[in-house]
Image (cartoon, rainbow, N blue to C red; front, top):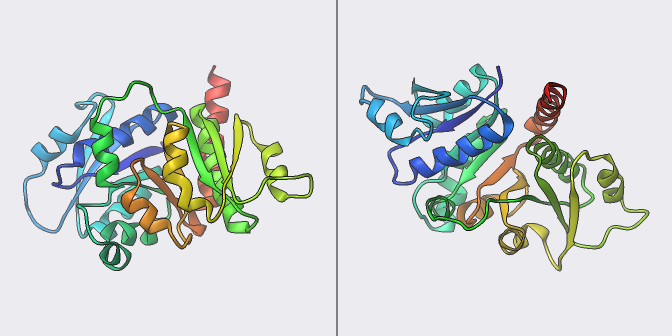
Length: 260
């Protein structure tokens, strides 16, 4: 059965990262699986218990032996994960995040879309908010890769009954392929036109739209830095994960519609 897998470490942000995974799993109607990756025999039961937002009710906990980069993608594969959710770790210089981040290594190794929760996003998760998040934001241009990622964002929006906001550098028109993409979606879609690179505006637009998550391509030049400082979770989609993720999310939406 499909699931949402959350990587749990010993950081202060772990419960907030688990809460992000729980919210996404609940919206998708999926089980929540909490995983702690370790290379030794350290006790992990208390760690997983403390981080578990469901307190064992509809969640599973497991310890994976191995390094984070290898263990989490393997567990995600074993449990048919729709999404893999992890924290980006402590605050670090941008240069170190670009070259040494374990979170980015997981993104490269995983065959599933990965939700990255920065320390700032974890802090926001712990802060009471007056209203629940109400949108998914996604930068888009006319490249095939951007369109595939936008389709993942649209499928996620449809499966969670959330509004999709596509952020682009110029207004769509009758001859723009974005217009075709808009007509294909089974969700409420809005567009925002910005000057410059759309991904550079995700933080501002995310705040304006009360976004639950931003969706971005793994090969987007600023993807890793966006995920490092964003105050909202960032769903990073690799080229190899896009098609299968879209199909899986579409099936979940169809199953929910048939059940209703």
